[in-house]
Image 1 (tube, rainbow over the protein chains, first blue to last red):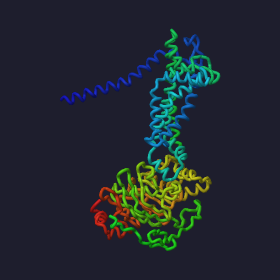
Image 2 (image 1 turned 180 degrees about the vertical axis):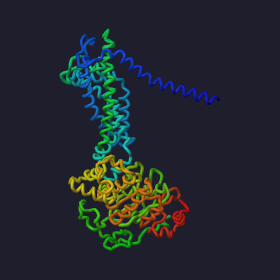
Image 3 (image 1 turned 90 degrees about the horizontal axis):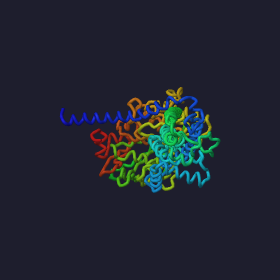
Length: 278
Length: 304
């Protein structure tokens, strides 16, 4: 074996090690969560209210709060985000000032630490707009955080629309609205679904934004104006502030992971069906 | 270069009342536009020739600092097929795209000169592009049906243009699919995705989609170059059958194809780094008695 071949096989081994590490890392994290959390997971844990600061009882009300926060977040993100992504991919003049300005703002927003969004949400939604510690404040602040991510991913999806469709639509004198609604959005639906999944994943995992805005009341929320604790905040609180909360934190984390996997599968299935119908 | 421009002026050997060969130079236009009183409903099959011819006068297409084609002059008579032939990069596709102003979509692309569609200079400022693209249909090199069902590919453009009467739409779908010889092949699976069709069928569907909107001029940009020989032959026959109702301009790499189906041929070439039309005329004279030495070499397969 000459030197070059030795180098080749050395690098091959290195690349294999890195790939294995990349597979092992998430698996070991998952294993950790499953090992600690699975014994505590039961149907009652999912539906019961938390008791004794979460040491006993379940996460029923927190699941509901989480869904409400997520709902507010998505209802805000999707129309604004899709509108902005369409503007960027369809309407803005390439290399114009407005494109540069918009791109710059999005990049800055995407780079802002989540705690800053938390403080911003607290100052604007909770105090200035008088929404207080509420699911509404939390969902809106979360929307601010995931918007740049959603917009950039959705924009990429819209840009993958085959050039032939656009050419044909223009040559056939199809209206811009017709092109967008019947050709562009359906052909990008898979990518837009992916943008939603990524945004949901990011929103579900977020803690810092919500502590300052949605609060950490564990009661079942009655309306979007109530404070509500999300699963991620619950995990944070149990593991940081509540001695003896470790196992329930792991069980809650397991639920969170399962939710993200489920949403992922569902969104993929839906986007495939949507494309099939069109 | 201009000395070689043998601008086509020969009158169509056709039924005189159908002749619309537009001769702007002499000012004695013999246009006899059959009035378009017919609605979309019964336009298929029996549509009399109402298409105007095209006249290109000193058309330049530039991309930034490079000239794609310069000083192109050409008469494209109605009711016949005119083929633009020539090697790659001689600007023939750019010239074709400028007729439906698709060139507007390319930033930095500038078209100057005059292109008359009937009496209208379509390069003039204030040209209604929507109206222009309704009058000029375009078929592209690779088939590009929309990702929808076969019938939706025709229904969607019709509805987008404001057609609401479902019975008329159905009739149009049947007529245009019949026109392109697809009806018998797909009548039982109109609801299936158009992307499941073969390449040749997709291309014919694209042509049908164009016809449904009742254009006057049809532009084909190398419509067979992405197809296998059998599909290609079908599309050729189809294009040949369309000339009685439309003004047809065809860009092709394939000299044999031009010879088979075109009535008139314009030869493009690259001279001094820029495309131009070096010779044009009726197909037989271009192939049998070419004037320009490059045309002679090109058409006899010695060059290009």
